[in-house]
Image (cartoon, rainbow, N blue to C red):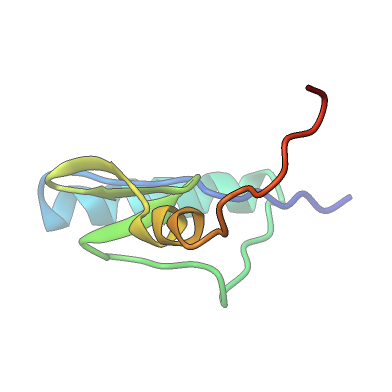
Length: 82
C-alpha cells in the first residue's frame, strides 16, 4: 500500500537545525514507505502556502489569492427562500 499526504511542514530557526529535521523526516518517510511527490515538494523556502494560509517568519496570514477570488465574485442579484 502507498500512502500520500498533503501539507506538512518542517521548520527551524537555523539552517543546520532545519537540515537535521529534514533528515529525520526523510528517514521516517522511508521507514514507513511514505511516498513524496517531487513536483509538489518545496524545500528551504522562506514562506509557503499550507492549507490555504501563508506561513512565514512574520506569522500566519490568509492566502491573498483566495481573498482576491472571493472579492471578484459577482454580487448576488436574487434572494432564495424568502
